[in-house]
Image (cartoon, rainbow, N blue to C red; front, side, top):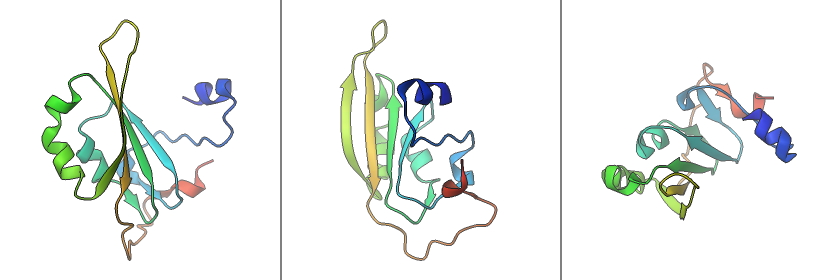
Length: 120
């Protein structure tokens, strides 16, 4: 992933190979997730006290397999983008983006979590 950012000339990209529940997102940001499990399983593990956007790259049967996950996710997250994209040589893919509805008030930072702002 770092090579991709470098080749694209992206300077404002931070990469962290870690489980999402081990990161405390303490800055407004956009997170992207690929090759992951169910949407709400990941959204429910995010630790933040900021407004953030989270984008998933999902397979062609996303809506069939995750209908219940979407219903649950919409309780705390707004869908901000849904787009089908064509990937040559494969079935269509779905990009779906979420933004948290409410920034949790009084979220306590667990000192065992890595602060996103400290990742270089």
